[in-house]
Length: 130
Image (tube, rainbow, N blue to C red; front, top):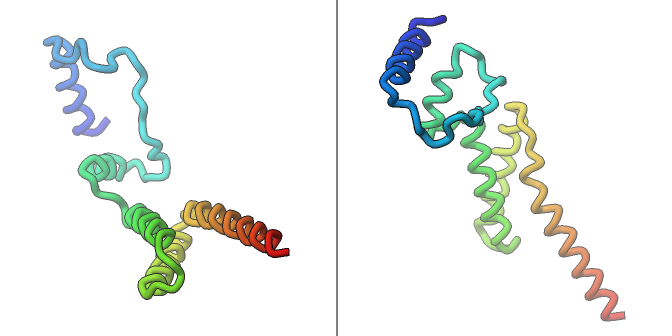
């Protein structure tokens, strides 16, 4: 056990003896822990602190930005000027995420739905003209 773990255990024991930890919300229920099995054990505490402070690893920041770009692109017409540069930025982010070993299917789910709807509408219009 590391010195930090021992220090934390000592403070928890003191708090338990004083009754400071009784009647807390969720007492007696299992903790819902984050799956941090992909993070090396030596870095878990620092990752947890950074996560609680609102900081994300670069890959997660890129994922968040890619989701925002995909949402923006879904509202733009294909002919708008910003569309091309945003498409390029999204493609670059997708490539970076793939190189980091992350799945990028989350970027294409909405696109597939939109494409299916557009094709269905096109078919209806074509059938009505005939």
